[in-house]
Length: 462
Image 1 (cartoon, one colour):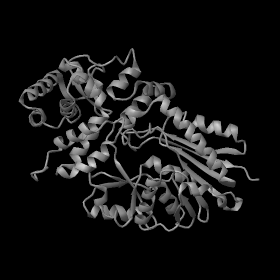
Image 2 (tube, rainbow, N blue to C red; image 1 turned 90 degrees about the vertical axis):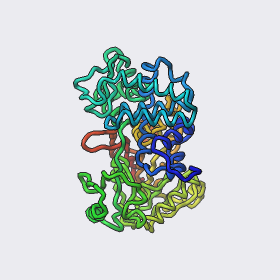
Image 3 (cartoon, one colour; image 1 turned 135 degrees about the vertical axis):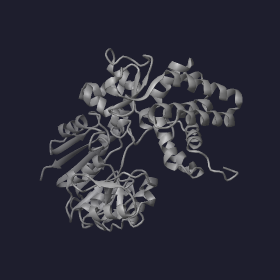
Image 4 (cartoon, rainbow, N blue to C red; image 1 turned 180 degrees about the horizontal axis):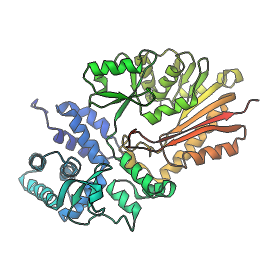
């Protein structure tokens, strides 16, 4: 942007995608550095994450109809084509001519006239094979339709997708751009229709939910403040969370700077609710960064508990301090991880009434938000995570008072990280019992939410 001219959303999205390898870095961090280059910030964000979420399906369409597999298309051209195909398939309200024209212009700027002819030809070929950019799924064949929502899809004139009848995992993997082994795992665990719903939820454009800071405001007062600023919002069923329906930068929302709310998914908010911490408790948040649940503990106890927050990642622990400062909580003390294991925590009376253990996990319940996770998750990485999770659970048990509780939570829906791990812990630690547990699958239904798991483990009184 040397000449001071703002770029289009598509140009910024292509720049981000060219610099993002989802297996090794994060699109969000790159996007944050270049978003000032466009006035269409929300659209650029949608193009980046929409293209990444649906890249497998987009590449299947490109390979099927361009006559050339994506591996043989130059990288700087491929992302221009991907963004164009994303809009053709998943943004049916966007005019075709605008999509193609800008793709051609962006190619000319990046690679010259000759290559722009190739990009134009690929997009035109795909357009020729799209029979209808939006049809009801009930009226469309599964081998020629890419789903957009649970009720609509983009219909092609040719069967180019794997058959859902002969290979459900392969079909769902392709149309939802998810690892086939992961989809097969869900099919074994949950069955076909629930798995299909999980796939839709994993590819949705997630809504933003905020948790009102009850130390400073009420849900009703915050909703009113948002409405006065022209922001459409709605309370969830128990009035504990607010869904933001109007796209807006979070830091620009009224009440953010004043610490009146925290961004948090509905499912993630349930862990602390299930623990039900009380004023006067001594609570350890062992994997606290960035502090979303830490501050929820403070709010849930009226800022009248003693909360110790720590995290093995000292850099991310700084984020906890920032959140505490913004929200104005007084009951949280941020402690370096190694200090937790000093002798002062070995004294029984200095141990904790509860330990909140929000462990590192595979993120399979939050694939819509953590878009890169679908490119990184593997059975090997889950096995490595299980080892860490089990070690952390053992550590939490050592830091607990007699009769205390562990709140074990993940944003995974894999049983190996959830029920199987918890049952393994209970088998090895007979002093503990399972008070309650809850698995929530990601949903795009009436209450849109991520997936996750929480278990409350209670140690017997000595």
